[in-house]
Image (cartoon, rainbow, N blue to C red; front, side, top):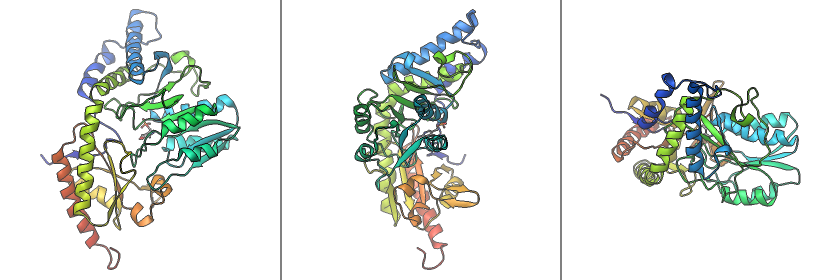
Length: 385
Ligand SMILES: Cc1ncc(COP(=O)(O)O)c(C=O)c1O
């Protein structure tokens, strides 16, 4: 069998076997609607309650501060819109490098009369707390800054931002989809009022996620219907998904720290291998304040799509920093916001490592990259490389 190396864990992860095992009874045996009063319903309700408690414990929150949603995207929509619409009008602060789930929600709010400040970032993709301080106005009604960026892995100074938010009495939403279950989150120390998290980035199933909402935070629902989730999010609960998310969180609680150390060493092995063996490369993102498993590497004068496709032929999965929109290849909004020159930004590739990544995998990927980048550069028109 040909070799397969999956280095796209920030996009999605395989479901942990313990999670699959925990979910199985909830498809056929315990299939009731948690809102039903009979035994079938009560059994499903009990399972939802157990998962909620597991997640609450992991975050040092109360179970009734956890609301289940259909994904990180819904959590972000709910987090930002829920805070803004509860206040009717005003000013929202976010950053230029947020996930589109936040950025496009903010753009929608602008269309509804809200004012939004999109904060810049430095060359490492870091938001400055001083910029947040300067942006706060008397009519600021929400701040939304992600914990770590999915493309470059830079970890934002959420504790400093949270302190400012608290000082000014502004609710603080944090998109923690890329950090939840990967690195510790100090909800209380960081003054976080609302936090988005998602299952499929942490070896849980897709289509299940959640929001932490600090008790007393004024929010409106964005999905209406029944009385589910204390009337904060209508819709019959995704019981197998919720059970899976609860188990995934329990497993992360056990493995997270040890794995973060192991994966950080592998991440550094990858970058060191690349920079020692391939000329004209750079690491995008913060050199230290970065997610354990994320290396975003720019290969100058080479198109990231060609690298990703070439790696795919070798059984290696990575992802391109650029996106093809309407026939044009565009550099990522994150790299543009960092001020990365175009000839670097177009050659950015993200490698995101996970629990099954080995040192052997990393050495194989470095070998593949060295040969591939040399070949692609040789094919460039004279004078380009
Ligand atoms: C930072 C961040 N926020 C939100 C999302 C959206 O999450 P989901 O795929 O669960 O909708 C992602 C997914 O890549 C992400 O990385």
